[in-house]
Image 1 (tube, rainbow, N blue to C red):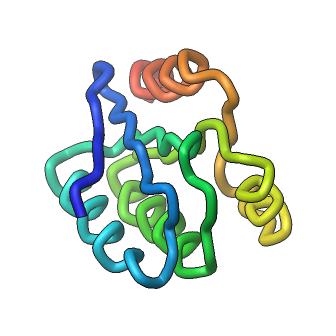
Image 2: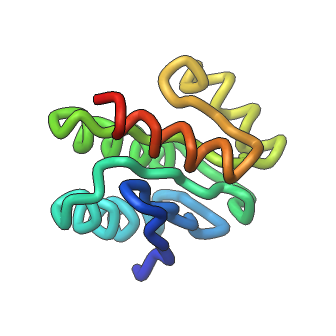
Length: 117
């Protein structure tokens, strides 16, 4: 799976697929692991086009967060749909991940976190 990502200074903006489910979770996890191994430790997951996430998809988000933490990294979520946001809140992951509706604010938050580390 090829994930689209773009660098914004120290922050990597990663567009996730429309469905993040068991069928593609392993591929997504591997692609994100490669990003982390390449030194990208401040990630904004763009969820604007994500229509559905299952528990396997949520585990991809959590495992990526765990992978960046030893590097003093962070993962935030950008613009989840109402359905995806409901699942994130139901599983209480909104207490683990910061959620932004504004792309510039998400990029700024992680970019300024790098400066203050």
